[in-house]
Image 1 (tube, rainbow, N blue to C red):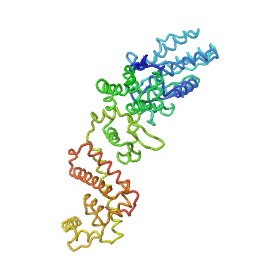
Image 2 (spheres, rainbow, N blue to C red):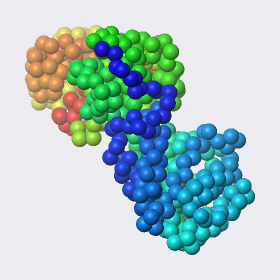
Image 3 (cartoon, rainbow, N blue to C red):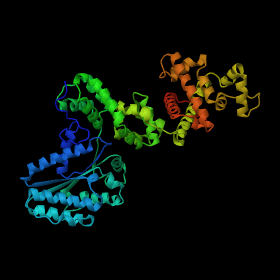
Image 4 (cartoon, rainbow, N blue to C red):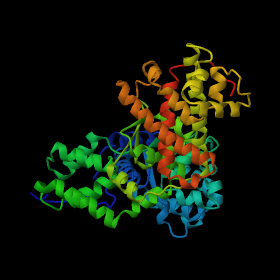
Length: 519
């Protein structure tokens, strides 16, 4: 069966094809009409314009219903990227033009010439308009909808634009109660919302659009097409797209052109067409990620999920901000209840695996080097605590009996005479990372160390020992390159894997807190 009428068109904004955000749209209409203002952020093609066009449509309907009751609601929609020669004056002239058109269409109010409105007299113009509306026995509510404000942010005059609008909607007596606004944008808008110094940060209610849930994806696929797609097909679309509105529209537009009995094959064809024709969308997304953000995503690619705590331990204090950027774009999900992070959308994951580029930077190399040093410190603490329980000079006797060459090297590093006696702490201070791992694996000691520290590697001691060996080999390899300033010989995968192993081991060591060494 072929869908009789294909409802999907990723190139066209359609406020009637509206799913997943109906409650949000209703809430926006109600609160905008009551004087509240909003900032809406969302990644590229996350459905911001569709939401705003739906809000505009519902506001126009609401305005019709309340006009006879004396409330005059005027929604003013500004798609700034469509304005020719974008400037502050062109924005205010467009606002004035729309106000004039709406008042002329719905009332008998005679309005002043909108062509004379500029940035310098806009507040005065609004005062005149609201007074004229009140004189006509209406209570005005003018709602400004700014779609895609990036052009304003990038302009020289944008620096004055937002403080001006803060004043208009929140600090202009006898006028601000009649005004409300919604400002919408992508990453730049996200930064405005999170910058405590931003003029709009604390006067707007902020909303971040996220990809659809599985339930909303099912409604979008089934209700829009009037076809009862199988559960496993819906789940496959959700897995592929991560619930991203644009990606769902794209693949469903192609799938709906073919026999639904061949749905999975059509979905595979849609995926191939995307990579052939639209992969530049992913390139544009990725360009907005700095190197460390890409490294964080690359780390997640190899995992089903990771905790936020683990990610912060691996990537440092800026991790939260970078995770927010990835979530804002729609390529990861942050589960607030569990504090877990996971990949969202196998389509982007597959593209990134093939084409995503990450450079080995000093920042990342330094981060891994710092983690390696901490692993060494913690290993020494753990081993000192363990062997001191046996005998203060247990390690000296061990090396003298089993590896005289290594013992001579330890004595030389410690700058001690050959006949010196060294306690366990002194021996460990002069032992390399690889030898520290070897001491963990001593046959007579491994059983106890495994039970107290390494069962998370595996409850089976042999399997855990094998996995510890894997970590030792990789971390020693990475450490040697970094200590000899040969990080150019390391791939990004080497560093990310090393970073992951370090963080994992440090979590294990945290369960055992021996005394701190002076190292």
